[in-house]
Structure formats: C-alpha cells, structure tokens
Image (cartoon, rainbow, N blue to C red; front, side):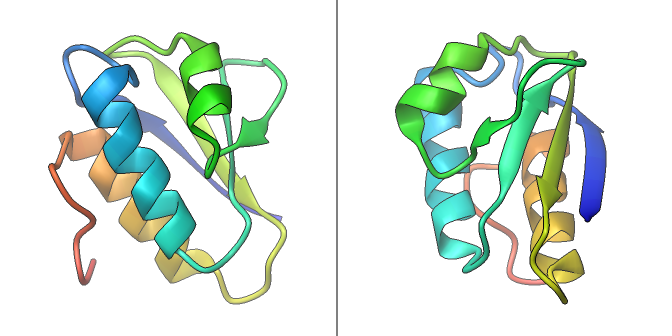
Length: 93
C-alpha cells in the first residue's frame, strides 16, 4: 500500500470549497484513494460526504493511501494539492 502524510494547506481545512476541489481531484486520479485524519478510520477520498465527515482543519495531518499499483504519481499530485492548498490538481509533480 502506498501512502502520503500531508499537512492541510487550506486555512479552512477540508470544508466546503477545498473539500470539493479535493474530491474532484481524487475522483480524477483514476485509482481508489482513501483519506484519514490522524489515527482515524480511512474514508473514500472521492466521496464529498465522507471527506466532510472527517472535520479536518487547516494545519492538521491527513494520510492519503491507495492499494492500487503504480499509483505513486497520483498520490504525489493529491498530496501537493492538499499541502499547498491549490485551487486545482497540478498536472505534474
């Protein structure tokens, strides 16, 4: 399993608009990705309700993970999006 630990770069955390941006990017990644807050239970990163249910705040650490093979590039792009609080998924890492 590949995973990335990242500090949330959006000041408001994964709420409303940032959560929507993240969910769209996770869906576009083309591999199943989970996200978890701290030592909590992982949730589907492509589900808006699941991501919002985390209640993840800016500056907190989350873990992105996937069991898909060759998904390192997708995880790197998602981690960059979260860490830098970007408005859209970066094309390259």
